[in-house]
Length: 485
Ligand code: ARG
View 1 (cartoon, rainbow, N blue to C red):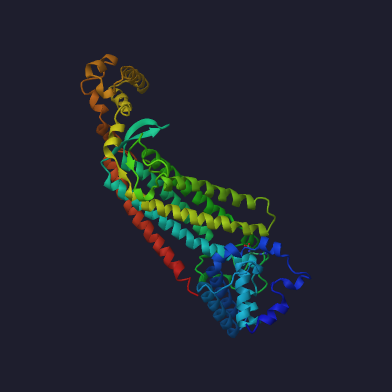
View 2 (tube, rainbow, N blue to C red):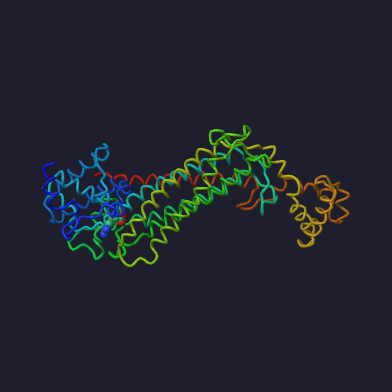
């Protein structure tokens, strides 16, 4: 309050000195990012505190100045968290808004916080701090979903269903085997996110506007204080690099794509026509007109929002292509897309983690569908085991299938004697090969759907998930201790 006058005479813009005319209010609104980058306030303040402590250590500002700044920043943080802070678009972005308020509170000495720093390296720092934390939230969500898949897989180990290729009956599988396929997709997604996080977790401060700070800043010290294992190697790259944003958008697009496929399968299987599963009521909606309807809206939105996340990835890449080195204001466009990607992917993994355990599997229907012709390959394999080349065996069984179709019966309905007419190798025990449970048992190889193999896969996955969650907790804890200010 006391200092407000000083500021007004200095112009409200930190860069006002060079300008003769006031900013156009339309231009101000057009360029302002405070409406969305306010979300970075905590990271911005933490980064500034670490920077300020370093300036003191390096003798660039005095300890007293450092104390004033740190106290002022802590007060600003409290104001923001208490909802007392005014986010004026005239202050352009969160970085300027916080600095402006700091100077209002502690006077011109507040302006020293920006010594040896530019908003270009500051914003890169803030986004990196924000994203490394959010990646953990996404990872916790993917792990929760993996746990849900595992539990369903364990609970339904006896359930059989047909697998499909081209959406045509292929071969019988265990329902659990199907669920574990999604577990594997999410395992790769988690790896990708962890890998991406390694490249997010690099400290850019000290790059200044691009050429590097002109003050003897201690970059490693700031990195240590903020819990960054590494610092950026090139100042130009540090301020213009948004690869890590693209990578996160890609990793998220992949998560969404997987969940979209899962959602689509569930939508399909919950139809009258398939009837393999029943979706939980609390995750469905009714129709305002047709009383019988139960619509899979949550799953449809999972599928629909995938498109939105793809859009953000393409958007980010497009913003970057053709950008001259180094910082350009175009880069401000990274944020809304990034924030929305974070929000959508997080909400999606968590809603799926809540929905999956509540799905009811309609065992009878699924097993019945697995009958029919889905064990035709097993009959061909039976012939192969009796010395017939696979191609020939395929041909013979094909002819049997054809004649069943003509008669409107299934393979199982065909009497053994009639089978023998197609090949003398088709003996009395041929029909045992057609039994679904035998078909499953035969697939007793690593990665196969034999019950013992699926059981093995579940046990391995449980072990993996425990280790993965522990790794997340450890990494999260090392971030946490760097997050006090
Ligand atoms: N709001 C800006 C952004 O998000 C901060 C950096 C501004 N730097 C500049 N030179 N105008 O990118």
